[in-house]
Image (cartoon, rainbow, N blue to C red):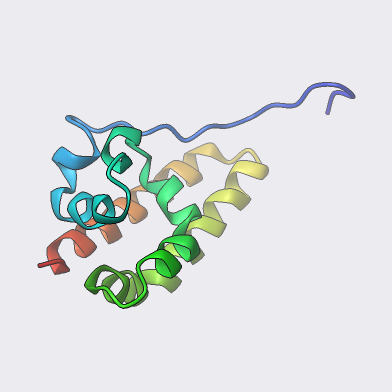
Length: 112
């Protein structure tokens, strides 16, 4: 590694429309607390990185209960992705991003 520089891998969102168009129920719940949330258009990876904060902010709400059901799987997958990125196994990290998408598909279907 260079003494004054480092390589960075960034996971950027890529939705056919945007986060709201892909996960409208999720965004509806998350926008309830933060009206600018949809404009931020975060990646699902970024959301998982903020999962504890989201659970805290949405205490006592239906979305918190749904997120809690998937917390361990999301956080375990997030950690594995971080490990693969750190070890420069980007193809394996990319495969795990699909797992996060699958979990968020389940979350979306479980939200009323």
